Length: 450
Ligand code: OOG
Ligand code: NI
Image (tube, rainbow, N blue to C red; front, side, top):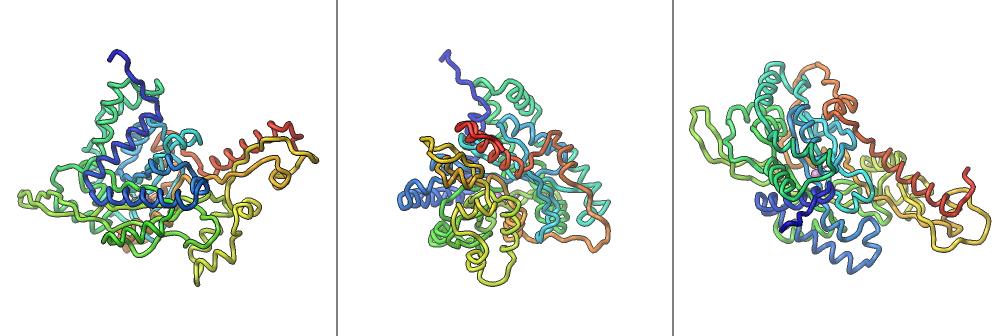
């Protein structure tokens, strides 16, 4: 037809998330089961709890909501990822150093996601993106690092035509239908598992350092590692998946259900599945074998914690004793209590009718006097402890070398240089959202500002 639809960034993002989901469902059939069970649980929670079930996001948002995980080898590859995701309205947020966690994985990570509340409501697709730190001598000898860098410099994860379309989409705020189709199919294909044979010796050598190093640097392409749906009752989902005979990891990572508002994240997964892969043996023969690197993961999202809330979360995560009892002893059991204690972020919105009484001067007065209502802000990011738990429970361990060398000094500023754009601070985003909502309430009632 002569009329062609234009795809803006959010339409591209929504379409890309759906295509990736279809691809991953074909590659990992248990993912489809997980999505089905998550949808059933969400429908049941909605029926049982009514509107309260949608307090942290509409059922439409939650049903479509996914996070992906990908892993790349070099700063240049990470910059290319940033270009592709930039066209989808996804920007790097947060810095995670997985080398410093109990899992000791030789990567640093960020998450690409929308940053505006409206864009998050349209489609909150986010991708946890890890980059191998080849120069970290605690993991790689100088000799192995040199060969790994050479191997990585010879591969192209994203064809130049895909990056050119991404640049155009970013500059022009979207793509016409034909270009959008070309962009979406090339972008999806870049994350498909490659049929290329895996070099047996090279993969084995890297596996001795870390299975993540082998997954990243042992092959000539990248792939989606997992795609994670969001569920409203993760304990119920865990039970139902086990009832279907799917072997889950031992626990749900994060705090237990304790009776008060959930902070941050709870995640669980099922074990890496053995997938058929072809290998090139040292004598040149091509053989069929399997690899276990990908897995199924699911998550429940709670309130975005303030720095104080995060401190509490981290402390309670390692506190001995009954975890639920520890939470009940240490945390307020209501949203209002969380707000008053500055443990979680909330936005304010003006009420319908101007109340009588003196103009309020604190947030508590605004709420108590009927000037404003508070809505919790959902956590949109990740957690190093949870990520490490997921890495660790699903993969064979990493081995740091018995070597006194220092780790490579890879920090947030370094990563910003690698992606060639600013990396947003998650706290700054939540803080700005809260502050803007307060300003809007003050302006709405023309209250004197303090
Ligand atoms: C990423 C692990 C982190 C999460 O949900 O915390 C993650 C990976 O396995 O590459 O996805
Ligand atoms: Ni994940």
